[in-house]
Amino acid sequence: MKINENYSRLKDSYLFSEIAHRVQKFSAAHPDREILKMGIGDVTLPLAPAVVEAMRSAAEEMGRAETFRGYGPEQGYPFLREAIRDYYRSFGVAVSADEIFVSDGAKSDLGNILDLFDADNTVLIPDPVYPVYVDTNVMAGRRILFAEATEQNGFLPMPDKSVSADIIYLCSPNNPTGAAYSVGQLRQWVDYAKKCGALILYDAAYESFVAERGLARSIYEVEGAKECAIEFCSFSKTAGFTGTRCGYTVVPSDLIREGASLQKMWLRRQTTKFNGVSYIVQRGAQAAFSEEGRKQISKNLSVYRNNAAIICSALDRLHIWYTGGKNSPYVWLKCPGYADSFSFFDDLLEKTGVVGTPGSGFGKNGQGFFRLTAFAQEETVRKAMAEFERIFS
Ligand code: PLP
Image (cartoon, rainbow, N blue to C red; front, side):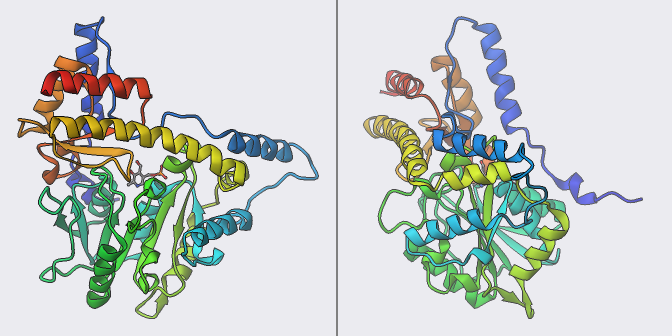
């Protein structure tokens, strides 16, 4: 028996445990000090009542012989796939229900999709970014190149003609930088991918935060993207499903590589290795698209948006450089007067009790930057930003 040696090449994922450890140490030394948590990218508001009601009623159906359901379709019930299709249609994107695959979240699909591709592919991944893209490819032993996201390009790297890749990851609005591509910028990526025959894996987990006109909610807003891109999305940040678990992936029927349909391959992969998302959860996800559900969810999103606006206006007043915030729950700031993200983390915690996420945990270009999240109570955000103003004015 031989193990997968690639696992030994993974870097320790110590970021959030290290943060927890430092906060714990600080709290133990200063039990009277308030901790203002603006670090973890998890939602804080509860599920919308329409979602809860739909899940309650689905649970009751499961308890009656006449309406009980066993295994469902692995790729999701038609009622949810059609609701997702209609959601895309609401912002002008045509995808068919057959191209939509429901899952227990974007993270699983982002890892599982790699089953479809040979290990001998070169992968291009933005730096900094959500660490799952790098780790899943390290596990498979693929060669990884990085697209440099920097202050100079607004943390939105564009294609470099001198670089050739087979698989390209894009995340917009981005975690951790909050930067979001315009449709025009994505068109350049689509043109580049088509030229080099590459496949784009587009992570749209934060699309519901896009507020500005001209910015993309889906890569399929670019004509021809269905021939070169798979899109991943999630109910986690849109509808507060981080603990409920539901997401979806769009694999267009136009995606053909080496004569094989990637949609058919993904269907085969899912029907072989996955047994679908619980009926109850899928009914909850469907309710997120109902009129009532949409209203309730947009109320929650505006709480987070308002928090982001509070963060941004404090940073504006302090002339601290940042990206994100307007179209994202994340604000990515340049550590004022610090070259090292963890030194800034320590000093900020010591002086103010504010906990954020050191940017260096998301890639080398994150060094010197810091992520604050709007997934917090407004009172916490106001207190945290008042502390920023007290310290950095
Ligand atoms: N993609 C990005 C960019 C994320 O930040 C996250 C979670 O933080 C995910 C995907 C995972 O989403 P899910 O909860 O649907 O697995």
